[in-house]
Length: 292
Image (cartoon, rainbow, N blue to C red; front, side, top):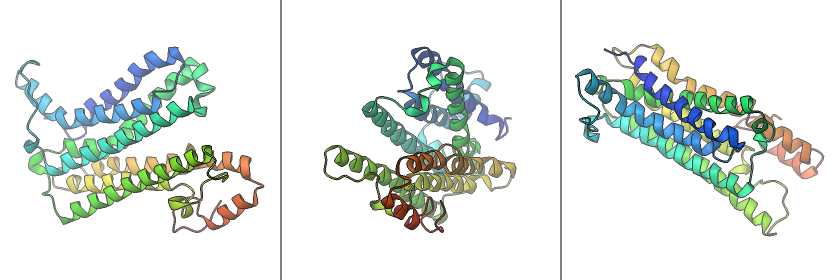
């Protein structure tokens, strides 16, 4: 019988397969236009594989044929499996389409200006995206790997967690929307502001990233409700924690905040308005002390 961990492999393979297939097309074309959209696609495909994988395994182990396989009814899944899979799918679809719309309007993504001219580096970027999809998906994949018979019943704590999930996703969407509107109004000449300081951007210099970390943390918390049960290795919780920890590390210290803050300082470092904004607005968590 496959263990919780061995059940993860189909989703991992699906995650990397989507990115490698995409790279085989877009690396030769030297275009990054579909990079983020295919990252979202990777999430959707691997999440689908993770929830249906166990039933597919059981079907073929019993000697069933591909043509004879039928998707199991939704009622056969635990509520938490359906909810966490749906939550990740909504987040991925929203983020992917938002980023695709943004790059379509912008025409290019400056992160790839040099990379896409070097096939090996550009291919590596696609593989790295497969790793990102895999790490972010772990809470969902692990939840779906737990047999329904071992899953804890849905309770009030689950409802509270999913409410926080919705709130976090809403905050991320709102932050992105506020900045999009601000940019559009800037183009239309409705204001001459160099950078946004209103809405959620008045309490954090990167509210969209804060909301994304909160969202991933909420999925981890929801996953723990299925993983902290008899028969499931304690290591499963540690593995699921990789998702919010990785998200925080990447956004706060690698490719998110540091890059944007460096670019902002280069453009507006001597601007009194920017200095005032950085003195009064936390770089990340709204409740944190002001650190540049």
